[in-house]
Length: 268
Image (cartoon, rainbow, N blue to C red; front, side, top):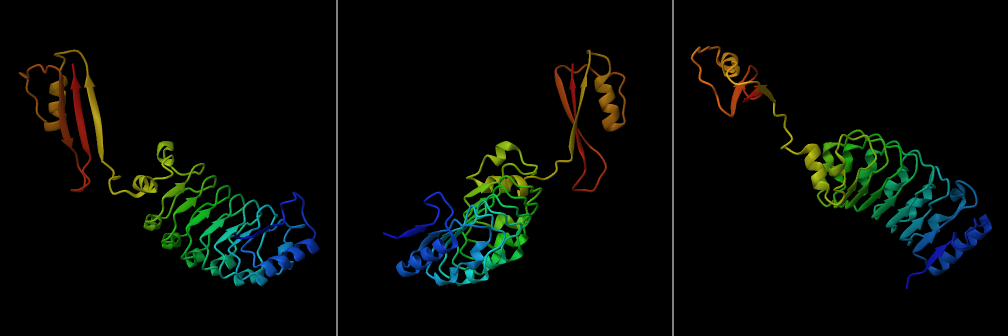
């Protein structure tokens, strides 16, 4: 059974000396899972994280962090990095050097953008970014070919790069509570990202260049004659009365493949 060291288990913030003792224990026991609750913001820079190169999971959530220590790059086997509920206002670039990462949790921080270097995480399967201030995504996000879960809910996104459709393995996409022009019934398809992409980028979403005009009135007052004059420039004084509904199409000027089409509906 894998051992786990959690400095937050006692619901109090341990002293710096306590944390160092726990780190020493983690080194002695080769602990793969470490959670640190720090005694003061950014005291993580004083901790010898680099002494744990075998670490697979590191949880630094709820610590008011704004940066990570450079020596985190020595965690070559790290697969999960939890940084939720901190104060990062930029994506820590040092993360892009952790090639074994499968999960990054940056929920509830202050991020306004992601760096293009995020593509340097080839094994990433899950990115959790809910509750930030993201306004856009880099086009390079489409290069994360192994990505399966992407949570972008509760941000300030107004659009998505079309490269995102390259994420063939994505099976969960949450875009709720953004500024995207996507109907709620489409956003609700969280576990069907391809349906969201089809709405945003699908080839079927082409402008129709069509309009409809409806002529309604009493019988025998000249509606058919008026439509004939509009459509064909002709007038027949012996035009017979039309019973029921008559539908005519009117192709107006424009380029060959973008001529607006009007539908003339007449109802007695």
